[in-house]
Image (cartoon, rainbow, N blue to C red; front, side):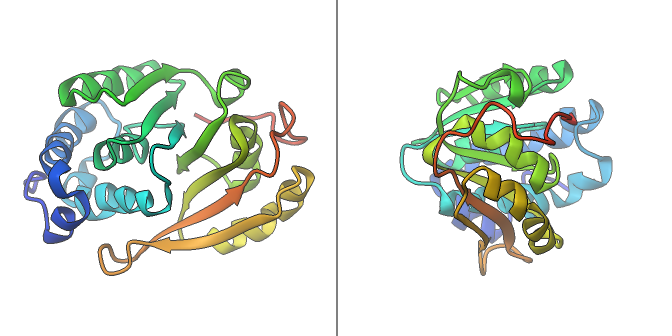
Length: 224
């Protein structure tokens, strides 16, 4: 296993003064994260490029002092990374599984992050509790289903930032009918971290025109 604390130059550029916290989190991921099955053992050697930097550059699309709700937070990607790189943000990590919220709570305490709350719940269970500026999600669900969970948690004008892979464009096209039912007029692909991470991080940015109804038709199922 490689040494996850050996941060590449790109990490130093992206994280700046918060790099020591990112290094401690990387070590925790490579150790407890692997042991507890939150990430695969093969991921330990590529934590920086594939996970930490990949998530940190999402901060380019997040306004100052925003409230961020990270749904299906898992091992803290991207929510915990955003809280590290952007201490001005107020971040809630929403995760339904106990072993994952235990890991997240330990990580937040270890890093002494005062700008993070960990909450054990599913997205559909907290509708009405949040009107976030930003909702983030990574590897949670296809965009059409994800929108049904995320958009009710946003304030009018808030944004869903969904980290996606090679199928991002196809997912966006398939989700257009659902987004239209929500009254969404702005939904686009963004590629972030140009020159810092390869390939650049692809996100789908969806702007909530209004606070949607509690649940969109066809969005009943939620994977954890």
